[in-house]
Length: 228
Ligand SMILES: Nc1ncnc2c1ncn2[C@@H]1O[C@H](COP(=O)(O)OP(=O)(O)O)[C@@H](O)[C@H]1O
Ligand SMILES: NC(=O)OP(=O)(O)O
Image (tube, rainbow, N blue to C red):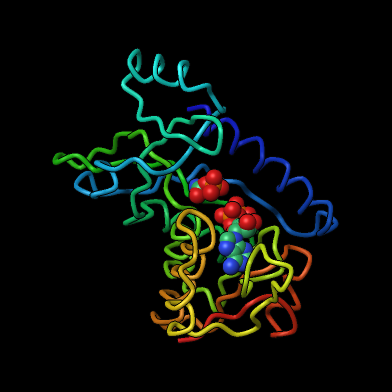
């Protein structure tokens, strides 16, 4: 619920900035997007996504006992972890398509979307989880038939020797080269996996890089382009 409020606030900032940048010439809409996950997803048995503040070990263990939270060490501190299941379906895709056809710029699937499961009677109910936002974006891009999927972040692309002084951006990354890299779960690995899945499914461009380089990434002049 807290994540939902945070995402709504972030989306509101993006909406304002986009409207201003577009000179209010195009309508911009934010959608709180439900994303269906599978209750049998193995991720539910293995919470892995850190959320919320840092705790001391004593406090983390107390909260774990009181609320049934899964907690893990992170560096010198402890954090709560929740399941990170794969997104299966975006039930509001038809609404998103309707808005796009009318020329509306749609901001949606923020933070991976609001995770829900479909009950046997067809109704949707919320679950405690954080869906990986790169996979949710990939599912959305495929669902609207997008030509390009850009995953814009705080690094200039996928880097060789990441974290070392010799770190270097990789302009074009193939599936084979990506496999040899052992990229970390929860940050760069899902971006590359989502990009590979997008191009495997017929998407034309999957790029990773900085927000300010978005146009240049599309032209192959910045960031990392993922290829099969
Ligand atoms: N080989 C790598 N090249 C570049 N960044 C990497 C690499 N391995 C891990 N990262 C990390 O991936 C992060 C981007 O992923 P993420 O934290 O999910 O960002 P965001 O929330 O902006 O999508 C970078 O800030 C960097 O710390
Ligand atoms: N949804 C998701 O993957 O969140 P982060 O931005 O914390 O990675």
